[in-house]
Length: 234
Length: 221
Picture 1: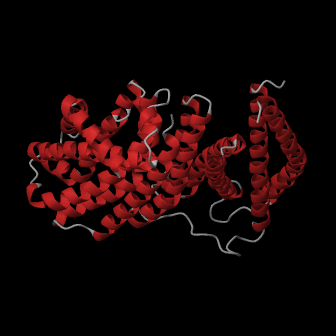
Picture 2: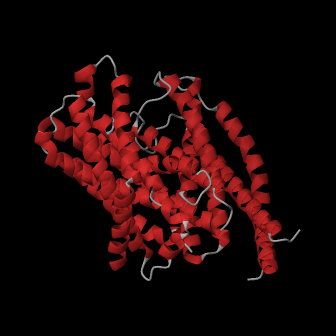
Picture 3: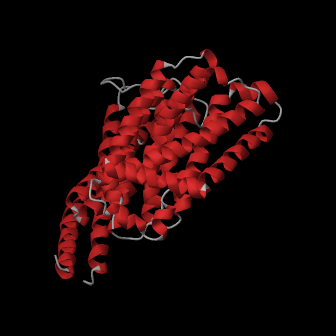
């Protein structure tokens, strides 16, 4: 493909992402209002008090953090297979939004832990795995930042992203086997939430899930526009 | 396969003639051992003996980092790395040669470090030398494989020396857990703990496969 047609293709793809992201953004805005109302009116936990409301933010952030890395690894793998730069741009977007979600999770988690477990941090398996995931995200980001822009850095990042995604189950398995015992609740079963807590929790998952999609699409779009501009089409 | 041995032989000969890396790593590892003495001053004997597995692996990992970081430096100097990429075979074999050379180099430094550690902290490692060497070899195989892959990336990146440990250390966690657990078992009852060995084998195989395949994309002309 010539540089011009590449620029045009990037621009066209950015346009398609725009077409999805814009209505998504409006829907998100509306839903956020509903979500805020649902959380505010949700019943206060009889044991934990107000702080339990972090429930409506914290687990959905965790899903985003893990999803981000899966997107990064898939994007990297497809890039290595096909050599199409658009997959690399997808990986960049996934990693950055995932890093954001992971960071927010690492902030909300200790606040909740301090309030209910009485300490900011414990070397609980899930905490440890997430902390390592966060470090891998940071390392991935630094690899991108320190490498010269171009196919070589894209390939390095793709390989590192794949190593990183392998590490998630590996670390989990290792820490379950040899680490300390967990104090995180096991996977929630249906009905384990108190009355009136299900809806706000669902709303939280929906809003933060859509929020992830929105930010991810926008970031991917930005990367495509940057590519179009770099290729000389203004 | 021929490429594997050619690369391995070349790396070992280069190292034998210059002795750059082995000397640097050895001196560094000894310094780390000395630092332990000052970092844990009150608990002279027993405290260090209790934590010997962890301390040993700290010394092992940091000296390995030093050596791995330089393992592609000589290839970049005269752009020999492009020639390596042109080797008429899968690049994974170049990786295996490099990784094996690193493995042997790190192993030599580890033997020396462990000896010095045992001498200065009055530990008797000689009775358990064989199982200790086995568990160390398993751990080092993993470090050398993923380390060689990441070193090949870091050497072609700005601030590669700084980036190297940041990229590598998170990937070493499963190896460290298994290696420290295994060393602990060896030091306390002289036998290899099965769970740790299984874990190390799983991690080693995973890392060897991923690095073998990934090296194809890391090396380029």
